[in-house]
Image 1: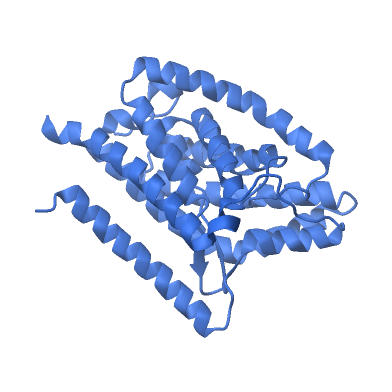
Image 2 (image 1 turned 135 degrees about the vertical axis):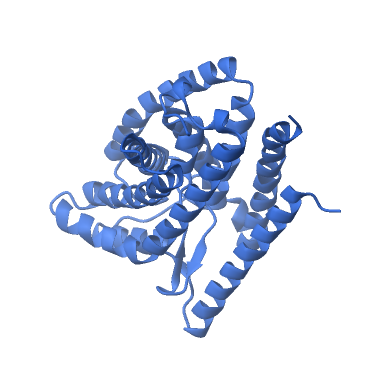
Length: 95
Length: 221
């Protein structure tokens, strides 16, 4: 039997996933590549001054790819948030 | 708002580091004091740190504009754990994000300035102001999220214009801000919703955890 926290977390995951999928699908239908605005604006700015973006830190995403890299980050961060969330809010429920 | 290495001039990188360091120092002091006085503070910090990291790195597609961007999460963190502690959390988050191809090491100060300092304090001060005029908690938190998100990108645009276009700062500031806003406005609305929801939820369940006298916040009730 799922507890209330797990049910809420799962429902939120479904809602967020649906939003992502709808957004990505509509972008795909419209023929957009869904490029990040950070990079777009940065490229525009750099082109005005002949600057070029580089990276001094080795990017994990270059090795494993963005989907896997961000999935790993999401899982790790999700576990941390979920663990402390239950720890912090369980105390109150048990009082 | 993640500005990469190689974009900003070295003197601007140094300046933004110099501005950010005092905020980080106060934040470290705030964290030390908070962990001594409240046993729940450390797990809350860890949770907020992970939340800020993932919220501010995960790109959300915005079909209206055909591009994607991310919220920042720091206004939410500021309300829960305090603004200066949030500067520390966002600096750590931004550091790790460089290993995901977001931002840069030399621009860590500039990115901390936009997301960690201006994004945090603009939202937090608006939250305090709205609470002073008896605004409902969820509404004040929501507007904090919205304002912090927008402020962060306005400052990032200013950082780019100041460094790259010193002869025409205002026009380029407006240009870069206009580049960010179409994608960022829907995400700022999303930031309004989740900031309002999370803060109200925490205040209902654990009102003792919403920033109170410890870090200069206001009572949640």
